[in-house]
Amino acid sequence: MPNGDATAARIERIERELVLRTRLIRLAEPGLEPLAAGFAENVTFAPGAVIYRAGDRPHDFYAFARGEIELAAAGVPPWILKSQSGIGLLDVLADRPRAFTATAVTKVRAMRVAASDYFDFLEERFELVTAALHGVTKDIHEIHLSLAPDGGFPEAAPAGAPAAGPPCGPLSLMQSLGVLRDSPLFRRANVQALARLTALAREVGVDAGDTLFRRGDAAGKFFLVARGVVEATHGAPEIVARFGRADLVCGFGALASADYQYTATARSPVIAFSFAVEDFFDVMEEHFELTRSVLAGMAAEYERLLIERERRAATTSAG
Image (cartoon, rainbow, N blue to C red; front, side):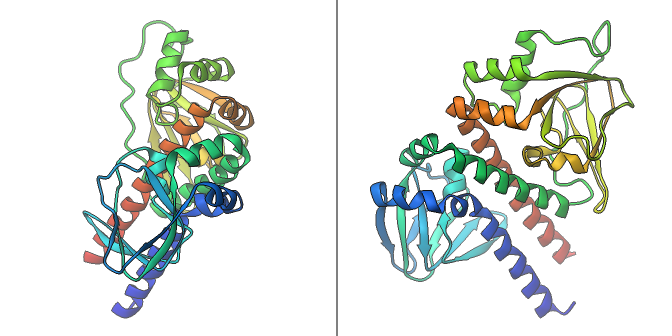
């Protein structure tokens, strides 16, 4: 492909990814209108003004931004947003310092929404959370599929030495709670939510070499590894990824039933927790701290995958 065509294709891909970055806020727009009317502050930024800096605490985000905005971070090329529905929301959801510096390229008009007001609003309208989760987790899985052959999944923790006695003996309540607490999905959840999830989890034991689930079997549920290593395979594109203790098998896409596209095999004696997605969402609605935990883990993973995809694309172009 000529250089000009390659550059155009790369710009088109980046613009698409940046649109996907704002899916949460776009799906919530019907609800954000009354939120903005009641709580948002109209703001204007002149060309060259810094909207926020990498490393700042995310006390707010910007809805219905109009104008061109540059996002810059170390190690990746700058990205340009044009009249996006919102910026800064992923940082708010992840509850961690800003990943990018946002600068107005042209005059920018937006509505500043305080993070605390937004979370209060979501707690009262859980249907917006479920709609957003389904959309973003599907997007996360699309990015995994674009990162063959490993899917961009984090490296799995080793299985460790086999436990004495039966290879997949049941876990105690405290062991189960410990696994949930160590998972990015549940890391910020309170004890009450974790105890409720432990009661709902179905413990599954699988010997090394046996199948945890086959393609088409995992629709409507997801699996969390409690002990051992699980290898998941996907065809067309071919992806092989491994998941260890406290890992969500097939990543956050499993919350949108992406795991039904995979076959998962135990590479050591495995204990996994199986959850029905519908039951899981019921607990999220009952315990908003769990919802905050899921949103934080999902947003952080989404950001990581976007940066990893851009890093790999830049490496390929340089080669």
